[in-house]
Image (cartoon, rainbow over all chains, first blue to last red):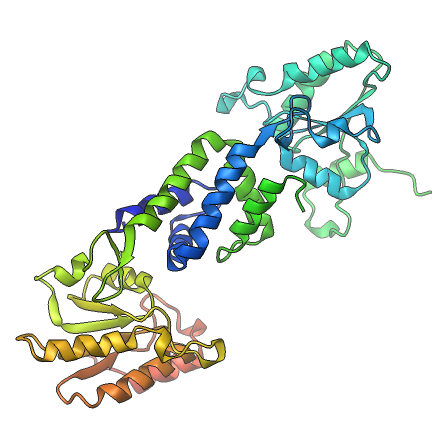
Length: 206
Length: 206
């Protein structure tokens, strides 16, 4: 414990961040304090800015800056008939970096996890169905929902739950990211479940 | 790069912290943003508090809260005749945690490093000599200076420089932390320089 109260408070706050333990928090706090005149105003400013400016897009629920609808959703060059469903806004960044997807997104803001008390009403699932319903009466109805959730129990549960309800829409194709051997990976170090999936879904060498 | 400017600014600020790379900064920024109503006000408050309240003690240059002289320096139960010289305030925490030292401290706020442009005037060296001079006319003159600097080139240079000047004071003993085998360590993994020092300074088994 620190004898300086303000320092201890900052350490406590930093400890709440993911992957930051007490020792790292102490190191960060001392660093911040050492050049406090330079570090603190800039950090405080950026924290205040982010709180004031960043909102959720009313359509896809990605983060957006001072707008009701984000740039991706209003971009007419993108294919509005495909929706890629992700858990978090960071997932969108990741998929965009792959550079092969040109559709829209929908952020669930989590995945179904009954053990952690995260149910259907905690996620943006109803909003996804509302989007689908609304699109059906337009010229560009949604034709494909692509799940890009984490390949874990919660992700699989969410896919199962949503896709079951989606099966009511006969014209919507439901897909999910392929499981398989990572490009550049080493067969030696791949777990048997991934390898089983990769074998199951093997593709013909053209 | 993030398309959301405020998010990118926060990521840039977080990247300036020690040991935080771009990926970690992104993860932290997304975490902060996810629960921004809870996380941001608390973090901003603690940053503002620390900037407003934490100052340097006018005597030992440790951090102190809203005081001219810190609690350690004004604690009459401590031995004011021994001064332990450390590089940073975090060093004081470390030495206090050992629980065997009852003297006072002096924080240099760095160590001599000509290559990085850190010279004598950038450190609290003059202030240390001022403290010594002032103590000599009191009932409790300083009798020992203990160097607890990092065991690297910069630390050794600083010890050399300061101790040379200290040698003018005939009644002041100059010591430094012992080098040797870490308690609980494994001889196998200790570097040869440490082992050489440990052999050189070997102690009689009582």
